Image 1: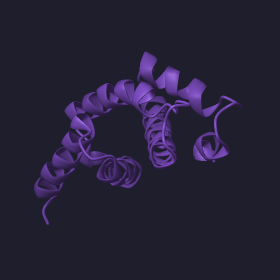
Image 2: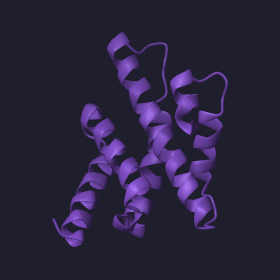
Image 3: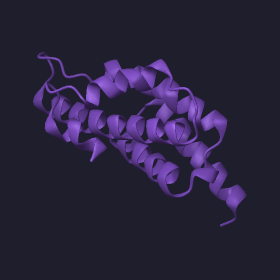
Length: 127
């Protein structure tokens, strides 16, 4: 696969995160983007970064547990929140490393993954 083909594939995966249609596949897509940012950052365009920030803004509320959630939905939201927190942390680190101003949405996620009231799996994304 050429680098251009890999970029196109990553762009398609990022679209799945932006539109958030299937939560189970969404978690997998988030994990792919996390690993790409970490290990092949040259494949991440500014447009993909921007779409991830938009997605993370939506995922703050969409991944939040509510007492009215059924058990299966609560588990899925927990997994989604862990993956989203990890993505936010990795993007935060990428911005810091490149001396880019940290957007408010990443600051919001920072308060989430540092919050002692969150599940330990969410707090552990920074480890």
